[in-house]
Length: 499
Ligand SMILES: NC(=O)C1=CN([C@@H]2O[C@H](COP(=O)(O)OP(=O)(O)OC[C@H]3O[C@@H](n4cnc5c(N)ncnc54)[C@H](O)[C@@H]3O)[C@@H](O)[C@H]2O)[C@@H](O)CC1
Ligand SMILES: [K+]
Image (tube, rainbow, N blue to C red):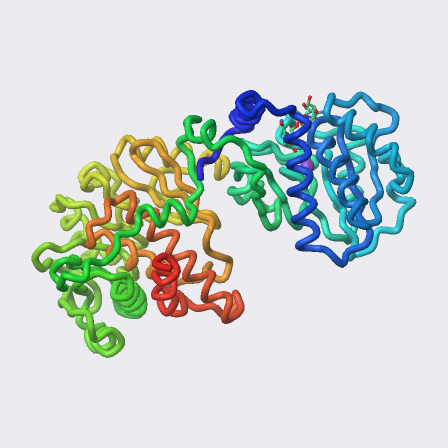
């Protein structure tokens, strides 16, 4: 699914109105209908609904929603700035319609504290949408501050009021803190970054029937990884095939005390479809690896840490988990990287070694996949002001070095040398644990060895890793979820794609 700026969304809306020969009011009604259905689905037992409306089209959505919910027997109360009824056209029409319904009370923002709002009531923020262009101040600002203190179920229409859709919002802005954001047709960039996503709660995207023809022709370099994309990437396994057809994955990982990292990466590679798996690890891990992952072949890479890397034929490598940064390992890894010609997966301590020897970056084969978490990224490429800027820096580095950067975060981004950004929306906080990254390295190496392009391996692998995490979290709690649980769910994810 493409990710658009607010300007592009407005353009798509306008062109939909033109080619479908409908009135813009019609689109607002569709938006309100979709909102109403979602609220009935999620909160049908909730009686009281408090809707706070601004003067633009976001407010218009709120007025239309109030009317529709009233006809579904919800007890609706409306709040707007009664001292400034200077509405945009569609908001005005919906406001006037609402005034005709005498059972709906219309109140001024300043009256909010007179009402008893219960924790099971709905507070709906329809103050500002993607048209926000400055800080919320004055009466609206005071109102948002009050709403943020109320203990109720808080829903934002399209985007929490106060947030910019496409860029970082300054720290001193007043922003509605939502439990759920019900947004129209598209994800917005603000939902995907930690600094701004924390205001959005759960995200629900509603189809309001904007023209697919227009959406298809509108160019964007930013994408949400959805099931449609994954199904287009997934390669069905040919029945007439043997282990030689699915590549040789080589996991280069582990050191004394960190053999578990090698085990996790190896097991994940085994579960992700590669034909043969080799693990290069120090001798101290031989018995552990052969016992816990007997399907993989062990190659001795040193005594207690890796000092020597000898690859089998046609190897596709994933290097880094648990290597440590011993001087001998560092020398060995740098020498190894210098001599590679095929794309490989580079993670964890291999990235830390590169950070200390940045000149090696230029020798890494084109289209290799680097998987830094924010701290590793910082060590590699420098500090940025915020995570939006981090994406920009990653885009620059991916282009300059011709590498794929997998920026690990709550919504991991896959950044390509061609300057595309793919945002992942699978996964959960239960995966924020040591060992999760090792599993990802195993998956990515396995997919790369099966001849997925580097870009597709990265997109598919990151999505699969998150999806396995979501399946695992359904069974156990996020707190107790372990990286091995992800590995156990990889099979279920492949089944999900095939069905
Ligand atoms: N354009 C369309 O056809 C549709 C728009 N929809 C809704 O329309 C919203 C966008 O509506 P608008 O473009 O009217 O904008 P908003 O309703 O987001 O904002 C209203 C206006 O307030 C002003 N403003 C911006 N920031 C302000 C601030 N901090 N303090 C005071 N005033 C401020 C701006 O002039 C802005 O146009 C979407 O988020 C969505 O909810 C939906 O009804 C679907 C259809
Ligand atoms: K809003």
